[in-house]
Image 1 (spheres, rainbow, N blue to C red):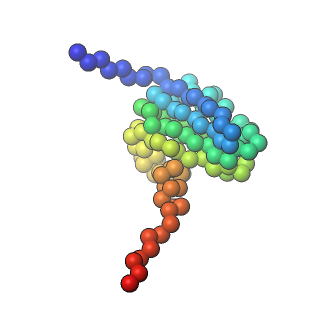
Image 2 (cartoon, rainbow, N blue to C red):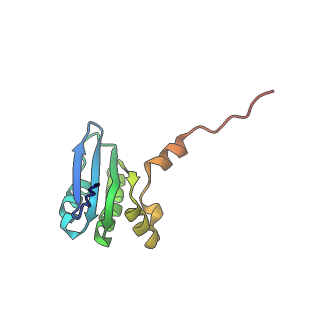
Image 3 (cartoon, one colour):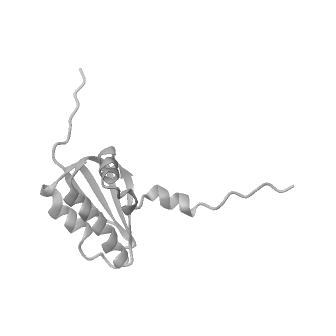
Length: 125
């Protein structure tokens, strides 16, 4: 017999690193998690913080208020000399962003890697 568990309540975990911040989101992010999400993304950044990375790969649902905090977190980071990127996104988050037509509002770590790859050189004769 197999047992599966579904995380009904969401969580926001924050890890401060030497040059950045890692914010892990999981479960259903609703109004109950807004204070923690605001504390993680909208408080003054530590000196030397260059990157705010959000891992949203375990999100099972997210409401509009939480989406607004994510977008505000990106703007806050940029205004303070850092950048905010999503390292992973769950289907629930992607579908919410698509539904609201704001998929480009939250940069992805993968898109940064693709943009920074050098162009392929053509073979020489």
